[in-house]
Length: 238
Image (cartoon, rainbow, N blue to C red; front, side):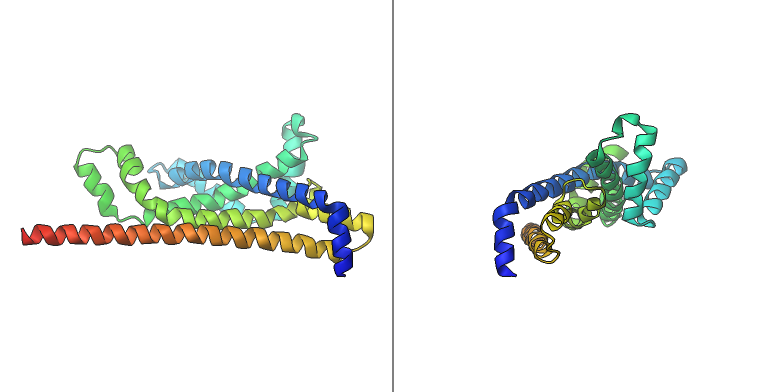
């Protein structure tokens, strides 16, 4: 088995490298654009407009309550019917499906992160003359970021794993390359082991990186809290 894996790495190494690049690109595009759309959806859900809130709620519920594979099929076959220019753009159709899926989950992350901020912070900003929008962007959002970023890191890792479903449509990701190598060599296990190791290394390294930054943020929060406490104590003594 090890000998077969070595031969596959020598002969089909570029296949796995290309698959890795496609997987990372798909995940990065999905989460990046998904964050922008998710932020918009979160704002709609937090707005006082019942219409906007209802539209955002329906969107998130539909996406979160249906399987991702079903959504991929829907966008893969449905988008070219609506937009003929996408008829042969398999990668783009799958990317749009993953963006819409990611946006629904990111919107909930952003919404919960904003709602976790003490309402008194917003009220204090309003009492100082801030408008609703300025209070949100300059007071609430900066404090919500520390709650949002760790969850966004987890979402990126989840999307990396979810891209494997794109192999159903042969878009060039890691699992697509597995199918290509398996078909060429008639070896089902060895290329699967290689792909599994690559997925594991990607997600393990990324989880450690995101965990490192999360600890740094928590440490910075504790330090700033300690400094505020010391400042309050000095003011009391004075």
